[in-house]
Length: 317
Image (cartoon, rainbow, N blue to C red; front, side, top):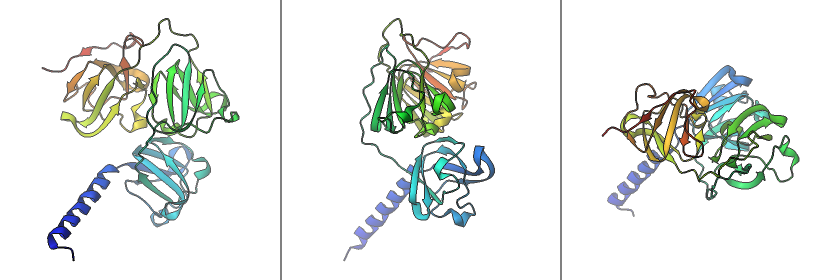
């Protein structure tokens, strides 16, 4: 028979495990009745094993995921055909349209090691089948208007851009929803995960000098004094933090490597400020909880365009 002391310990451990699990998944998803986020909506912050009990069964045609990674399934109790969705806006659901019966937040742990990234002047992008650089991969050195026509291509959930600027689009011939990637590592393609059908090389001419490896790392916090939820950025640029659910949220940050420019609009537009390595327990009022895009400033990619003035901010002594 288990002693009272051991039994109490097991109860405490179970409670602590449950509390940790609850903290590990705290995302938000909104289901819309019609495409393009129209019609009735339902916002969830916890699993729904049977959407019929909410009155929203099988009627979702578009989704917005603000936080977390969610699994949507065609049958109740998370059975049938299931699709994993990253943070992002999904204007239409394809094969899942009007078929979602259950949905839950999940935690994905990838065992695939990140690829070694050494930038080069030659145009080159590698597309990975799954987020976190997992699954099969295909390498491109030129524009591809119909990726599905390649027998080596099995979808894209992550990318590494070694050279050139690339545009990835959801439809053939560079139509539909698109995103532009500059040299760096992208462990998730957000709303385009599993939907990339074409890739266009935007900059064909090689750089005059060979770029050095991108070295940079910054941690963003949604509360002052490095508290609250955090987001680590360790790639060359993030054109839109909304895809990571962290737009207009940064209140403090810790820059561990590199010099970074942060802007209030996507694609490095709006009001921009440049920060060097250091700790910033509270950001200046002009960008406090207003940051939407961020990029690493170095000798290869240069400083922010002169169209948008910036200042170099030093941490308080």
